[in-house]
Amino acid sequence: MPSSRLGVPGRRLVAVALLALVVVIVAWRHVAAGGSAPDAVRVAPIVPVATAPAPGSGVGSAGSSPPALVVDVAGAVRRPGLVRLPKGARVADAVARAGGLTRRAERSGVNLAALVSDGEQVLVPERGAAATAAGGGGAAGAAGPVSLNSATAEQLDTLPGIGPVTAQKIVSYRQQHGPFSSVDGLDAIPGIGPARISELQGLVVP
Image 1: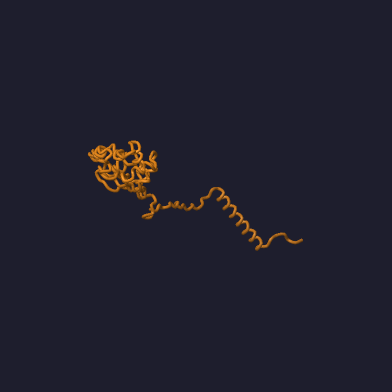
Image 2: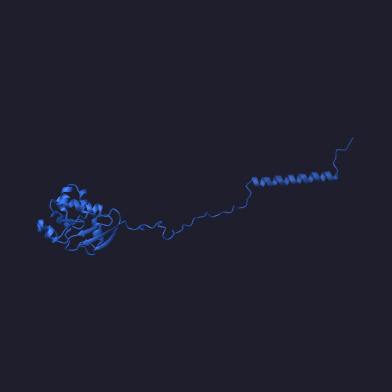
């Protein structure tokens, strides 16, 4: 009957296998019991650095765009000349940019609430100038033609067939649409037709 006992080398192999198994079991229990693991390396988040806009790019620079309107302010203002205004500005803004009205200004001779347009001339008359023109009556032609682009409403009122309402319409029209390029441009004013324009030829100029 063959012997069932292992030889010395076989017993050694069995002992080494059992020892290895014990080591594996002990290590597994240690990890399962919450053994300390190496700390994770913490990395700080990357914060993007804000870069300044390039010169001349216009980004973030409020008011960098140039003014849209250039207006000539003349007459009884403190600093007559060209002024620059944004779109939507009114005559009052142009007068304020020119230093305001002088003591001799005729406040009623200019509509401060009217909108201004690019290239327009805002003329502020002096006190007494309108009265002088009105005192001439129908002899306005003797003092020379009346300028449609610079005359006040009172001066335009002295023209034949032009009453105070129509005179104010002419002033308001040029303030909103710019200067007249010709006398025929009066056709755009309600109440003035070809017959009236023919009467005004020689009495008015652009």
